[in-house]
Length: 193
Image (cartoon, rainbow, N blue to C red; front, side):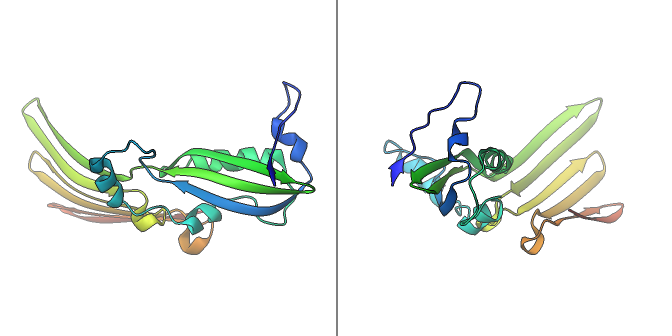
């Protein structure tokens, strides 16, 4: 197989030259958060604290599979879909042509997803404090979990949020939240597709 040499008119998508070829292989290439030979020890330690996004999570977002006919529009749309995922960056799908076949490398890079949340404010005689933690790629499965605690004047709130954008691998999104306040409790659930 030879990397594709792309020749196209300036106003056309250069990938159009592959339209109609059979997609023989789709390979996922996942790069770490900190990429390169000059990454220091501290970065490597931080990197080891994050579970890499699982290949199956990336594959479930693909609009293409082995055996499909190559369509430049679908490839560009798939790059756009992958870029919307908060736990991936530097997305590209690169074709390599071999006769009537095209092999695709889906190149993505993990990003840091564990975000601490800390806040304090005061004004007009009121004080507000907040502490929490949010993870948008829990254990590499693309699921979101948040927990937080807030004090606002005489009110306290403890909150927990869970979001599964692909419930059981489907197109159904489940989001649930539980808030416990000193003046009561509330639960929210959203199920949509």
